[in-house]
Each structure stands twice: as C-alpha cells, then as structure tokens.
Image (tube, rainbow, N blue to C red; front, top):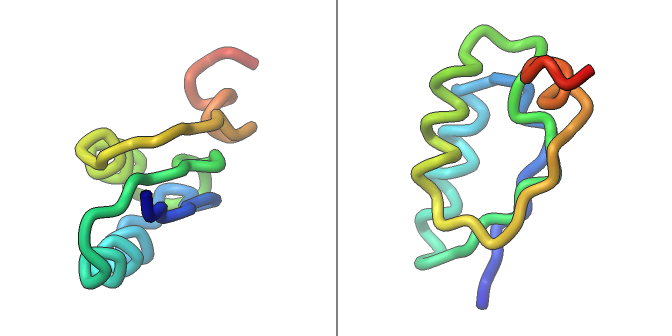
Length: 72
C-alpha cells in the first residue's frame, strides 16, 4: 500500500489542493493524517470536506484540531 503522509495543513486550502493534485499523479494512495487540519488559515470547512473524501488509512488529531472541536 502506498501512502500520502499529511500534517499541519492548518486550513490552507490552496496548499492542501496542491498536495492532493501532486499526489493524484502517483495513483491510488491511502492517507495518513498526522494532525492539525485546522487553525490559522481561512478555509477550515473546505479542508475538512476534502479530507473526509480521501481514502484514509489512519489519522491523529492535532492540538489545533482538538481545540477547534471544543475538546480543550
């Protein structure tokens, strides 16, 4: 299984789209998310929607994800 390892997107949809576009050139990949999808950037909802549509292998909640979800 080939994996795409992603972390610290921080709601930057432009960067996330660029990473996903490049990853698409490599065929089917499972995604390992190492946390912090949200925080700082202006597009947390768009980033989360893109992330939820990906073939996920595993994910870890980052400290910004935890705070944004009201767990801190």
